[in-house]
Image (cartoon, rainbow, N blue to C red; front, top):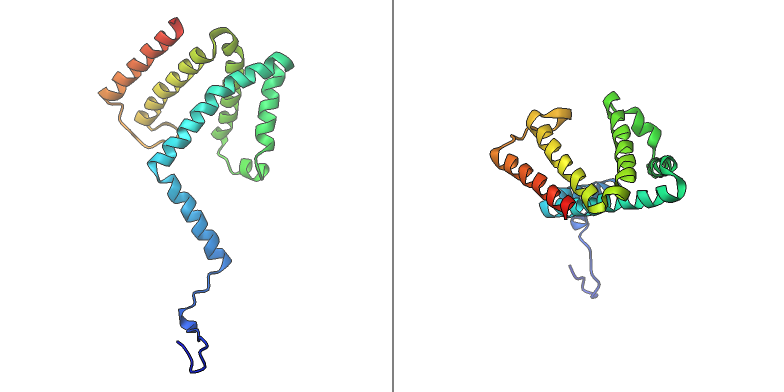
Length: 172
């Protein structure tokens, strides 16, 4: 609206006031919608795969300088230290979730021990293939709260192919 003197008037009913809380909520919704994007999640998985593949070699290198036991301790202490509000998060976890930390420690120790002997490629191929095969069983039997996903003939053939790929990587 323009007044006779040329100044502009603002219609107050058209102004939308956004509270800080609603803007934070919209940011969280945008983040969550990114995680609904299949391509973004696939990209995160690729990044995770690269991180996992390099983690074994990095941890093995640290183990050469600090000793295998100390390198595992350093890796896990740094991981725990980087978590914000760790005591509160830990207190809410179910009892069996503590096994995850032990399994993570086993993974780190195994890669520290295996990479120097098998090489990074073979170690990673064996670990990833065993992860995939076991994950298919977890899906099929809905272990640990995982939604059911049938272990179809196509998944069985794919796991056999994975095992063949590991054999080729290890041999050549």
